[in-house]
Image 1 (cartoon, rainbow, N blue to C red):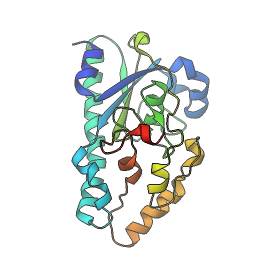
Image 2 (image 1 turned 135 degrees about the vertical axis):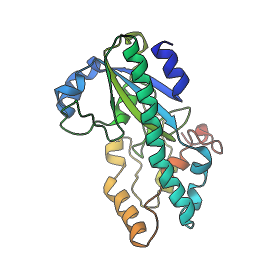
Image 3 (image 1 turned 60 degrees about the vertical axis):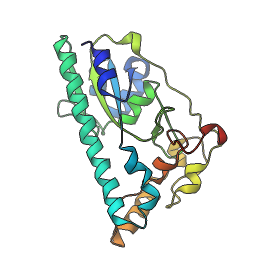
Length: 233
């Protein structure tokens, strides 16, 4: 099985980023080690649809909230196992590879800060950062968990380019956010407030509820069978 065949079999969506295109910016942010290998494979793994669809009910049902919180962490474990399987295939072909875990770290890399797996997917051109600062794809919206593999396998022909956000005038996530953590701005670094998001989650915890929300993940028209993105953007 080739590397690409392996990716197609085990991941729901994948892409390849050529780090040489953004080398200076990456090194400035994360340090020299992030470009130890020239390519990054972004692997997207879809969360369980039935659980995502119950998110609106989690605010009044702690059992469903805990189920979503568990799935959030379980999906990270699943995508990590997928990444490990793909690394095995890469190494079988005689190349080097290592996985950046869901926290964006690897013990063999000395990084200034944990790597954002959303960044590899964005640089690979398979998605964009929405106003909610979630990596979003046209196929699955933001209902994905991500892992990154750094490798020296020759994958230049598969490398993509960054995608512009098609969110446009859509404000569905802005209006739906219970913590008022999202505003209608094109730059996700400015439109999304991790502080307000965290404050809302802590308020839920202080009230005795599971620390779970996910409304912006659920409500995005992309990946949501009940909504048509064309009606909003």
